[in-house]
Amino acid sequence: MNILDLNIPYIYMPKTIRTSEYQRVVDRLKQARLDIGLTQKEVSEKIKKPQSYISKVEAGEQRVDIIELKSFAILYKKSLNYFIL
Image: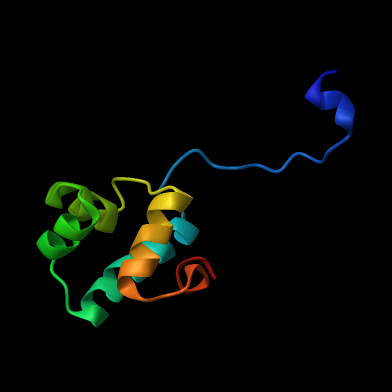
C-alpha cells in the first residue's frame, strides 16, 4: 500500500529549523536556563554534552529532539508544554 492511497491530507512541514515556532522553543530554552541561574557550561556538564552544543541549541543552529527537550525540561524544572505551547 502506498501512503498516497491512505487519503490523509498533506500537511506541509518546513525542513528548516528557522521557523518562528522553533525560535520560540529556542528562546524559552535560553530563558529557562537563565531563570534557574545556570551557565551554558554548567548545563553541558549536567547533561553530558559539550558547551558548544548548548550554545548552538540556544542560537537555533542545532535542533533538539523530544528526548533532549525532555532532559532540558527536567533540568530546568519546567513542563514540556512550557517550551512547545
